[in-house]
Length: 266
Image (cartoon, rainbow, N blue to C red; front, side, top):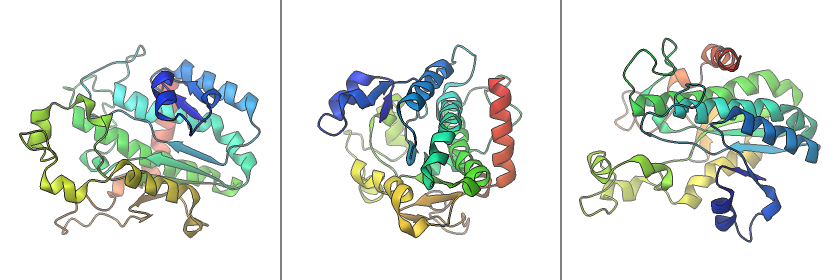
């Protein structure tokens, strides 16, 4: 089952893979849309074995939802929170379900900005907003695992790796040149060619976290390259790209974020 904001695009991409009737409209930026999906889906099936929270936005211009929420936090955290919490009863019924939440090495840019999550009192910074939202994705896995492991649900945060996809749609070419992702001719740089993955390679850690028996009895961890990531080692020259920052797997931060998201939702 594929919830999608643009069902026509999803149907075209997934033709021959997913039945058309299993592609259902859902907009993560709209709480009512997410809840409608949860309600309809819960009326159709009796259990859910695997939930992969794969959707997201990255480094977009400042955009507010109708509630006034900053878009990246709204989509990458609040929408996924409503979806995940709403589907937990179906996952519990599966007796061995797994949740996979897509984080990113971008989580190292920012922990949760507790004093101003939605940039109401400070100038909007798109990368800080993205980093915060990807820290949130990891913390959601930590908290769900802590709450639900005794009920048969384990949860995993995943860094899929750098992948050139439409996720970069909000980045101008000159910014990607400055980041070292692309040369002035619009081609991937040598560094990117070595570090970035294909879409199929990028999906591998999500699938591994969702299915691998290597993770039996484990949960609440951050995974990369089909393995449980080590804590970030600041002495490593590649620390920006490898390992997980402490704030993204902190159980107290995870519980606080769960409570704060519920407060935001009223």
